[in-house]
Length: 270
Image 1 (spheres, one colour):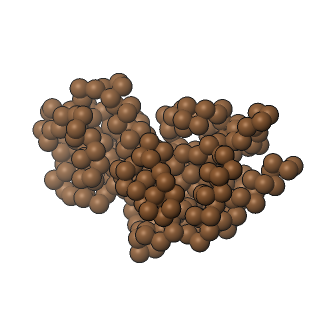
Image 2 (cartoon, rainbow, N blue to C red; image 1 turned 30 degrees about the vertical axis):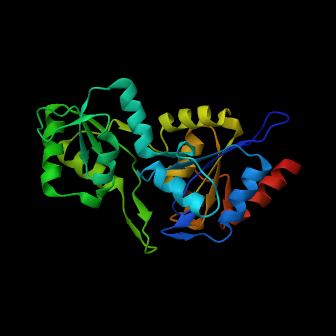
């Protein structure tokens, strides 16, 4: 996809976090300088993560590293799904499988149930608290006809220890295989729902948006399927040899986010 921009304005950036800006508690070399340069140079920027965490936590972490960031500058898979449900099913009774922190993010606004006959929406998310009892409740609710949604569908993510571990795809797969139901809505990347939200937030059409991330299946696919330009960084789960054969190959490949300013300068001079 070819990145363009209207005369006199800079393209917008969608920036992944885990595996792109940091790994666990460690900032990737050059990330702070890159992000400072983007803000100082005037690029519209939104952070978009499929990790269904609280935006306040990620905004606080960025701020502690010298990048003052407000929570509304961070979009997560859980906030996207929550806003969608508040719009289309504000009185739904939910069951969140399996991350307890995700459940806590929905609790102020929704009722919850562990009775399969009373559940309106089953939400699949990170498997950190997955157990057989919860899996059974979700399975029975889906058999009964509850809606089937997910915060995200990432196969894996890089843990604080720097190794890949299973993510929400493991939970979705277990429910799809057992219930014979397909997940009907995934809120995070590469969904159209997330794309529409970032376009509104950045006030840019897809052709003026650059997506930077480490995952071929989420970040790069998100850009490709929604008409944006993709940049794969090799500091997370994405691999150069996999990129060439991927269904959605990246438009650009960088060793790390530290190389992004040079890419943007080169494109502006072309």
